[in-house]
Image 1 (cartoon, rainbow, N blue to C red):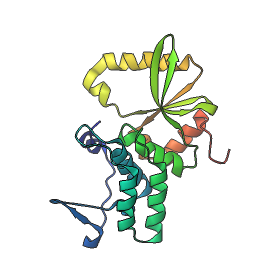
Image 2: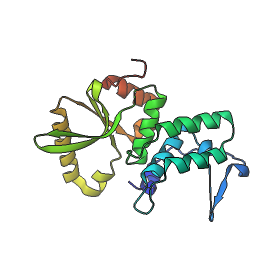
Image 3: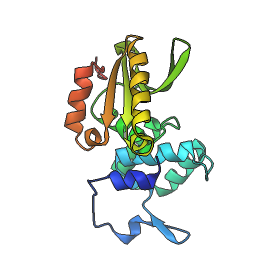
Length: 199
């Protein structure tokens, strides 16, 4: 999913008055330095930087650390940055997956394994999130593939989900609406049996 497609799906846009000093010039564009972002926004941005794109190579963790050290401000900003940096992973394949992981952390759930391959009947299925000890697979579903590929994509996804369930896993689907309502997401994770950090 492209960032443009992600932004078209957003319904909750935050607007804040920010001092011009909070922005940094980058060519002809201005950006907010990573340490000023919220924890979840920082994870989304860092995951994308670490993953890279078709047009851009991945950014090294060393470069990100050195850039952040130049931009550090307040103690809360430093704490948010360090927490986001330690949570970031190049394995998240979309902004939605990154945002979901940040919310799992903020809501007190254990960190899942990412992009794990499961095999059944000679076929391999890669899942977005795996809480192996609880037998739960999490799949972030942005709906884009169903809009572009239609019924066949939906049918293939149902067969895939049945195959994963045949291995004894509970399959938990996570949608944009869940990310926009963290308490709703918390209830879904609890019902599925996702373990908390304290359990």
